[in-house]
Length: 107
Figure 1 (cartoon, helix red, strand yellow):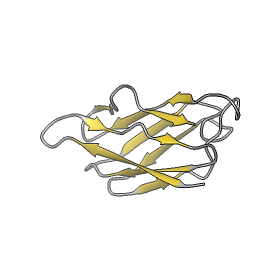
Figure 2 (tube, rainbow, N blue to C red):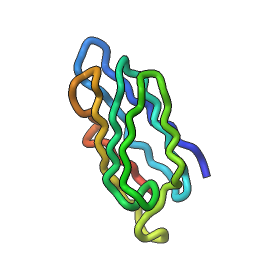
Figure 3 (spheres, rainbow, N blue to C red):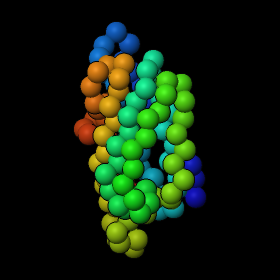
């Protein structure tokens, strides 16, 4: 089991915030670090992926949110599963992007 950090960044001089889409393993834990100049609001609307409950959390600028539930899938022995979530970046005034919508990929 590993702890995977997801850094929330803002492209300098723009209103674009970015979060990568990490591939994590079953049982890994996730943290989000806000490197922007204002709060970000994390919205994770799944009952699997990172625990058995839906959650939201405000992460202040320069802070890290340590999510305690391990990554899990509907079918632990099955193929990878993708869990989309949203992250609103107050300094940019819009939702973050991550190549596509941010997602967690549990292998």
